[in-house]
Length: 214
Image (cartoon, rainbow, N blue to C red; front, side, top):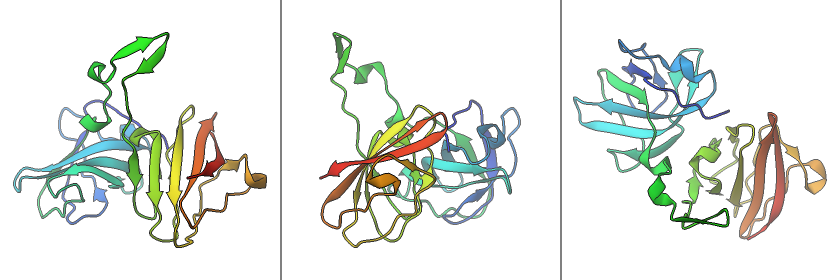
């Protein structure tokens, strides 16, 4: 589903461990995560001041149960993996991670309307249920670790190139994709090297095409 960013979104949660957070309501003067929209993704931060632990990542808000999943961790006090939070209230709020930001310093020159001097970080998907989200980068890699079911977080007008390494012949159950290659069915993945796939959304319809091997 689409990536949503909203201002002054902050709630608390008493959820422990490394799983999905149950949100406990907006802090005074702030909005609740409901403004993100059901099933939409957003960048989040979790802070437990009493334990000096924190986590920044990409999650999915679910209205039923008012929960926020922790889909992709970008940075954390646990070395970049999910923090196992202890008892007590944690602050949970929307943020815009520094590593996802594009600033003027990233852009060196425009020559004949061509952008130069900017190199995008290649994002590595992990797990068996990752969100396909161009917000993490328009070029992404994915080494399969088991039979997988990714979720669609590509908004209309967005696209991404996905390099898939499937050396063990795992299967992918794709979200609803209109495939424009391989006779209109999901492409068969290589078991040696990468399979390159492009995904894009036009008017809310997700399209896909196998573009080659690498």
